[in-house]
Length: 270
Image (cartoon, rainbow, N blue to C red; front, side):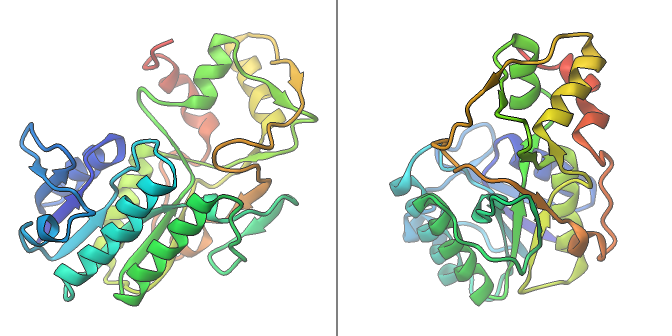
């Protein structure tokens, strides 16, 4: 089986690793190429059409922390160009649970309302629909952490963390390696035309998370501050359900962020 992977960053490199270990032949592309990667601008239809044919396409390219224009080019135009250039090849698109904008602490699944607060979230939904119309798969990922990366843990260990108001807001996360394993699982499942949340088993309130980290690392609790309602991805308060994905046979190796926090801590650059 052949995989054409677009995006070879933190998650993409793990996907390439796991698919190769699973016996797939992997070709990977990034915006600038190099280091064995093809060079491809997803917003350029001709560049996309020049990429090799495959049995599966995974779009996990990032917006480079860009705003609306970058989201439109990478996600909307990118998915449209992939679907046009390879109409018979299934696309697996890594989206985000930021498309859920619930603020009441409710449990959200793939059928829950999606009314994102930011235009970037609305652009992700537009890209998702392009992929679903092409009978592809949409993977909505919670916040990714793993070796060398954890915003929550880094801020806690460096003293930058704050507890927002009473700390009730839920944190939804997924270990990078569990996310990558989910991509391989979905690729080999034969499932098409569906949406899956990629999240671990346990949403943590911000207060519970920091209380647990304080005990784990023998450090004080962060100070309390007003909530930042203007955060880039919007202020939400929800619990993301992974039940649909679990029902297909996938199980996370790290059921909770707290299960991996100690092993991650030593890999962070503080």
